[in-house]
Image 1: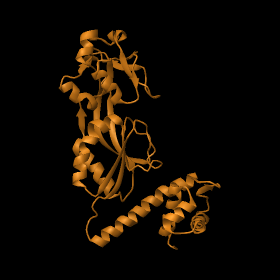
Image 2: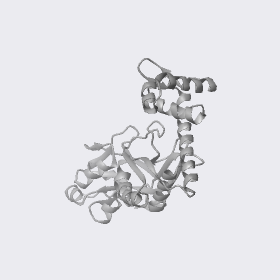
Image 3: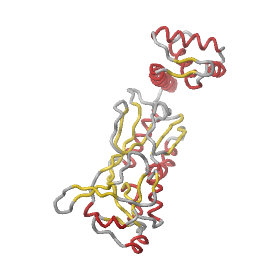
Image 4: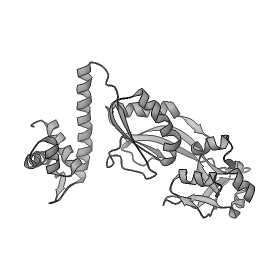
Length: 303
């Protein structure tokens, strides 16, 4: 176990199990041998990679960076050896961890997943749907689908979709409560809102004659932490929602929801990207998935 790649493998096992003993059992090494190899790396780098306690190991900031790079290097070695052994391009294979918002997952990702798995049967798809912005490295996620502006410059991104936000309600709700024709009319309606911290109680509008932007404070008695919840409320006639056009385009086309105040729509665009940790030699499974999504839905405008 003198090679640096071997040492990296031991380090990764220790980091992932947060235990020298557990890593030793996995690698058929003694805990002291694992500790010695990790210490050798630390001595060479001149910095600790773990904070050690009697119960567990915790990565330092340098350790987290080393873990990220070590995983990439080991994956590259594995993929290169498969390439040389087969004498051909490596087919995408292995576990592919995907994170997406609940709305995008429901409307776009999950319907496309069977086709992707048919094309790449050696890929094992592991999908998590959450509206929480995750750290790809901490969560060991290969690709995340994110809406809105991108803040993490360390990630690579590929635009998938541009979507207007649309104000909608069900025909039953409008029949019972009337159709708002001006933003001011929303004062008398039950407006459905997101409950997460970055959301606002104001909806943006634009004057149809002057183009002047404005906002309107809205109120209502039903809230949710995802577009899936608010869409369900809207379909059930609870109130009026403001949602991504990609999420409700089919409902509008089939008459389950009605688009409202379109003359006053601010036309604010929601950008949706696939983001991933960039690397010169990107794993085949990641490249295949991002290319697949871009081909399937990339560049569309909705609704």
